[in-house]
Length: 417
Image (cartoon, rainbow, N blue to C red):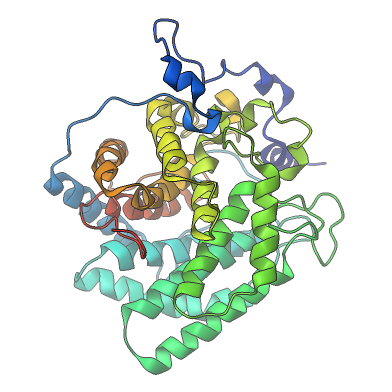
């Protein structure tokens, strides 16, 4: 077994055994912090640390960070309209079958970049041109994408973020013929999600069990959550989504949910629920996506209070995620956190803000904006894990869409004020 595949397996299992020596349970308060009797009576899922308020960032600072991020994506676009390349720029070589693995990376980051530019590029002529070139590439190349090998299903990320990009492209222009074509492309991508759905329901990005045509993979909570969010967006613009597909995916996440609303990394860890990666500090980058996915598909157990509690946890215990940021080996940090969960987790947290009561949103928007502005690189990009030459592109796209959620008035979803 070569080194790249070993690293892939480490990604799947949540790191080697010594990660079990990770930090103490982040649910515990410091000795000096005494809980009230009322707090002790609350369910575990509604109990956790509360971050202190932070000053509201100036709207101009948010706008400036977004502008610099858009500048980076426009400048970094490939001549053919895509983003990213297989060039190794730091980090280590992760198991990536040729050529399908790299094609999947490129499709996913291109889809994310298009979505980010549509959401945050405004009326800029250069951003519009970049969007148009990216759309042409994605509409042509994404339908050709398949799994890279029997054991690597990185393409699922591309189908997920491709759906979201096509939804935004559908809403960008009111052209009826174009919208019909995008409807058809979204249906096709949903078809791929059906094809690559795990036999146990939900989705995972490795199948080391069987390598069969219908994947025998154990689903991961966060990939399944990301798919559910994308599928809800597709349904909201009128694309039919099979009820059976949603029911199976939701059941998969339910099986991975712990009483405190931490979520297992994957179903294969169900007999090790107290593995560090499954505890609150390890779930910070997953609970946001999973809570959001269940919420938008009608899970009444994901209450406003639980959404707030996990946003509180994210900001009060952000250090557990931040210590993994930019580390080159997957899951080498405390609680077996991998760097690539940082902007992924904050992206879904940004969308979660719109699901808490209106008067609570500014508190979380200020925390989120403060984090994102402070982490932007000098070249305008954001990145959290060195993945060949794809990390700055996906990190920047996630961060831009997260910052957009921090603008007051951009936090409204249907059915809420």
